[in-house]
Amino acid sequence: MKCLNLVICLLLLPLVKVVAEGPGDRSVMNPALLTYITEVKSDFSKIPKDRKKELDKIALFIQDKVNATEPVLLTYICTHNSRRSHFGQIWAATAAAYYQIPNVKTFSGGTESTAFNERAVAACSRAGFEISKSSEGTNPVYEVKYALDAEPLKAFSKKYNDPANPQNGFCAVMTCSQADKACPVVKGAASRVAVPYDDPKAYDGKPQEKTKYDERCRQIATETLYVFSKVKV
Image 1 (cartoon, rainbow, N blue to C red):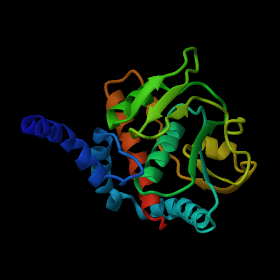
Image 2: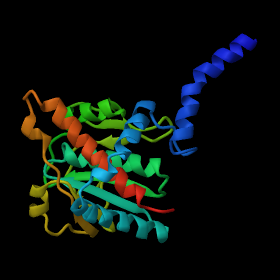
Image 3: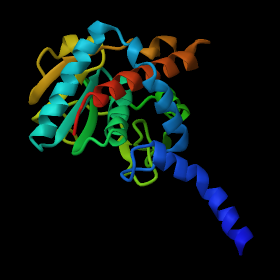
């Protein structure tokens, strides 16, 4: 019996470590993802000051909603809702759970819809997310999980004003310069912040493809986690 108990304890030890280092009793983060987050947090000091100035506007929006005990609605917008906006939506939900910021709901959309690009899906998987398809077709729905007890995020391409997204009271986070120019005003948005990122699509089919997708995923992870680290509950 003692041997059996020892074996059980050894099997549970990695999970106990994750709970201790992660966001506590709210979620048990995927172990690989938690390691990734810990590494990313060390890059906060590398974010340029001008970027932090814009990112702080998102943090202020979140803080104001938290102080008012109102839902925090964040919609990440790029042109095709295929890469950067999905990175934003997924990392924002993860950062909210990690820092235990309540009532946060994250969304993404584009000025047009295509599909959640499979290269971006792969980059999220390499970062530690558990991802599965719940539908097929040209615009499949992916279920993305950052923690054992978390409801999966449903990721698929859509326009930013799709009925699946909030229609008012949200912060519109513009993740690409093209969408930023195309939508100088986002109908229904309570706040609009432009933090454009370079598009990894430029490297599709090239030797640097995997590296560039991982770089963009990490950059958006770093800046999004920074945003939520500034919010006090």
